Length: 50
Image 1 (cartoon, rainbow, N blue to C red):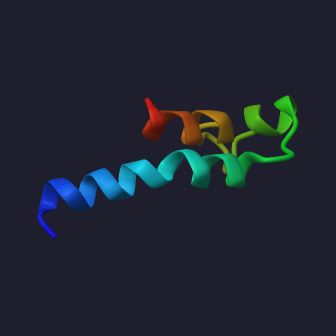
Image 2 (cartoon, helix red, strand yellow; image 1 turned 135 degrees about the horizontal axis):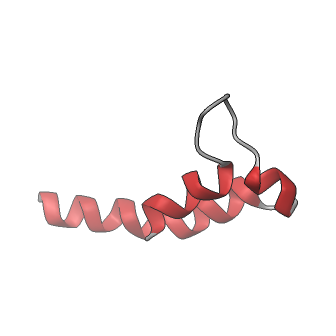
């Protein structure tokens, strides 16, 4: 497998992984930061998807 194929496979998995990670979270939970001063959960899952 070459690098292009590997990256394509990894990024193709993101939608399902992100959906599973945030399934059932409320809007308030998506806005919550997991650590003080850190980015909110919603931003953390949005960023790699953009």
